[in-house]
Length: 258
Image 1 (cartoon, one colour):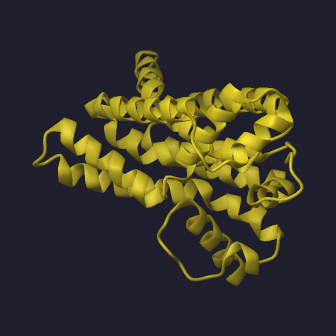
Image 2: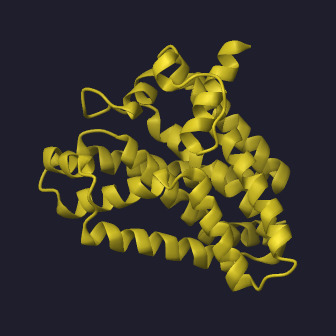
C-alpha cells in the first residue's frame, strides 16, 4: 500500500504543483519511477474533472471568450507550465540545432529563443481556440479526457526508447518503464474514454494518438539520439491540442457511423 501511495505521489507532484505527502523522486526506489506511470492518466482525469467543474461554474456567469481564457490560465498554473517549457525548448532545439549534440545543448539552455517563444504563443493560441470551439455536446467529455490523453501520450512515448544523456529525471522513467506500466495506463485511458463516449470512439481516438506519438518518437529520436523530458513534455502539449482540435471531428464522424 505504501509503494502504491509513493508512486501516485510521485506522479501527482511531477504533473501538478499541488503538494502531496509520500516522498519525492530522490527518496524512493528507482523502480517506482516506472510504476508511477500507471497513475499518469488517472492524474489527468482528476485534472480534467476539475476543468469540468470549473467550466460549469464559470459558464454560468461569464462570456465564453473570458471563461475559456480563465480555464486555460488556471490549467497552466496548476500544472506549473512544465510541459509548455518543454515545448518551447524543443521548438528551439529543432529549429536551431545542427546535429543531435547541438540540439541537446540547446535543450539544456534555460533561455528561450525567438522561435521557441513563437511556438509557445502558437500552442497557447491553438489551445484557446480549441477550447472556444468545442461543441456543446462533446465539451465536458473533451475537457475531462484532454489531460488524461496527453499524459498517456507521455507514457507510450517512454516505451522502447533510449535516453540520450547520462543522467536526468526523465531517464529514471524511460529506463524503468515496463510493458505492464504501459498496459495499465492504456487500460485506464481506454476505460475512461469508453465511459465518456463509447467503445468504438475510444478505440479510434487511442489508435490515432498512438500512431501520432510513435511516429513522433521515431522522428525525434533521429533528431536528438533519444527522448528527453523536454520532448515528452512537448508531446503532452501537442497531443492535448491535437485532441482538442481533431477530437470533435472524430467524434462527429463516429456518430454518423452509428
